[in-house]
Image (tube, rainbow, N blue to C red):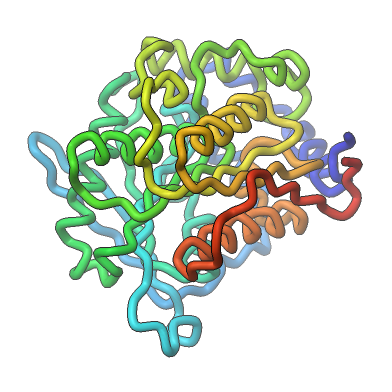
Length: 332
């Protein structure tokens, strides 16, 4: 299968920036380079998707405070809806880079398209805060969101944990921890090209090791800084011995992503454990496609992911075992 031409062009434009690989940088330098990449992808004429309201918040937890950002959809898209899901969102970036601003466009799209109240959480990053600090931040921030859901403006019976890449790992671990503790109630999980297996042992790590944005070397660099044991289910969700009883899931993967196979396998494991799971494999796309706001097929894929999540709340029967999303220009 081939890359979608628009995705290929986006990767070529990023390559022309002459960025150094993250594996050659310090975490501080990598964070600055990542901000540069995101600005270049948006372009000088970028205008954020309008939403109803965006508010910066502070989540006060025991011994620490986390920054957060709440997104509410425009009134026009919620007309006639008595309540909205509350999506607690964790950004990707290998637990080392990324922040509220890097994923602002994606959170706006979730709020407006789903629609939902979105709470994006600025959890602590490695190596200053290695494993398990990001996990504990995600778990505690979700508990905080559930306790304040009325103030946030969402539905207490429709709380979603969501994230992309490393944030997807945090989301599904949070769902499992909530299941084990018996609280809070999580209604669904949205896992966009998630990290689920820290062993880096799948075939896609070889096939997609370089040339498609995220590289195997970059993932190894992230994991060195995260410093998590690969057999700990709080780090590698696929290492959990029991996935039953988790909330319904939407799991998306991209054909040209080193993380493709572990995401596919995790979706299959959820389904085998009896978890209602919609798995969308997007052909012709790469890791982090949900952040490619200027690439039409990437946005189409993201919105397909969100429609699958919306179907969970609209009660449209049982999800298919595997849904292949074929995009124009992609060879399946």
